Image (cartoon, rainbow, N blue to C red):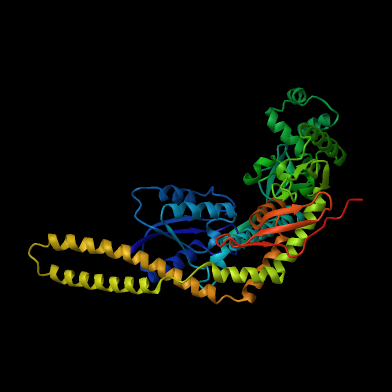
Length: 498
């Protein structure tokens, strides 16, 4: 009996992304070539891959654990369909492995040896980079809308209303409209309230006097949105769900602002007064820098094994300290050099070639012969069924043979995959490895701080920094399956601060 499989498709918000239907077409063709019966389909249309909060994906996760599940493989277009965050993809792969479920990709190159040895981190790092690039494209589109005086998205802030504007364009047969902000009837009250807050008046009492019926949290949001009420569009203020542990709002240095996009209710001076006071309060509540703010947290050790701890913008051990920005810049520069270096390329090439051994050819031949024998016996019994007056015993024997065939076919498929992979690894060239590592080094510059920390955590095993000499060395995680470790061929030495 042919093996059963499920399909999972996800399309993103990027208009250039491949559609659900196109993915489904590719996966059905793949199922046919692999002699798989499609027993279930899951899909998420126009859903981001940055987290797991997708209806189709959640249903897939639930069905994985069902005892009644009949399928034992999942067909997916490429690695990024699972998710564009490494931890999502790794957790999903781990869960499938525990349950004996194979993941088969339509668009992961069959002869890409690096994808089989180091790819679980390399390809997913590329997926994250693509996700970040898509985000940048989205921000660019939003910025262009804002520059033209249109709203970047979302509902109108309290005190404003949205006015729809017909752009005169047609998309997918429908008129394209955009929106602008205009002061609403309650705009004057909000302006008075914000001016009062800038003067230090009690917010709750002032709101009651003005008849502003908002909760305390909503009033706080009005203050944090002071620049919006000063006539500017601001975004990239709130953190995503994956960064919730670092606080709801990003620092003002990360905010993106387009000035003079709509009618102001307060002046810039009033807005700055409000934000300065809010930031002062926030600073007094958090006198220490969070551990998550340190890019190399948990990685830096002294030569005798003592950890350097992040504290007040520095890395410290004993009485020694070094500015975090200085150390992190030195490490990033060295990582970019090492990734492109001949030593790294050679080690990774050798590791890729040595990681997997070819499957046992004798076992492969034996399984192929056994499968042919079972096929012949099934064919013979099927012919006898047409002549049998009492087919029960023959049917039971056919079921037994079908079960045996399925088990042998599974073992044979795994062994053939191991053999194919080993041949690909044996043929890997240094130029292939160098090309991928060059791209990876260049893509580092596009990662934001949180994702850069995640990437470095996967790449670096440990950083040794001598507190006396400030001499440092980096040891990398390379091909963990083989246990090979690669130290930076040259050390680094952060410059002393003036």
